[in-house]
Length: 254
Image (cartoon, rainbow, N blue to C red):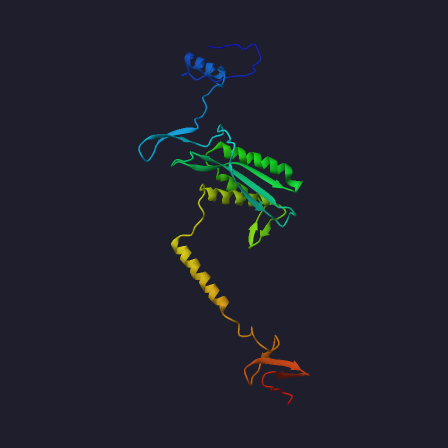
């Protein structure tokens, strides 16, 4: 059968033989249906069975959870050699299911304060984003790795004690990591029994070696004195143009 096309083709569609009129109508109706906006809220509580066998309602962290009037907070000081002013990081926690066996402390919000106004914009933005992630619930420990992976293109700095910090943001990640370890959301990295034993042995070996006194450390003779062939004492120095031992007086000029 030949069909004559008298108008210009502006679009086309491939029709499969297995498609039916009912399927077409269903697809068209689904495409034209509005997206529902009255979806039920995600529940913030979970029903569990406690150790006595009774059913209990456990409150989970969720963005719909209202902020209490009082929160528990911890403040950490960050002092870097690249800034004259310190930064004070305050992390406030909310206690869920207080007084029960399901009691849990979760971070709720974070604030950063500093006299240095050069970083004011990104400090405000970062604290709002991190606080929103805290209130969202779920696993928030991924923030630690994300922040610790930020490197300053101008180079990092060394902390007192010999630890290198790639950026201020990375140090903020270490602060959050320390806080999450304190409240029990993260485990502190620990060595296994074999590794701990090896480290203890090496540390004891190093300390024993450091306690050994150098034979020339408490010498009464000038530093750099050479060994005398006669009295075997490091006391030979150049004196009046001649190598002379200050211990036994031996000299090649005598």
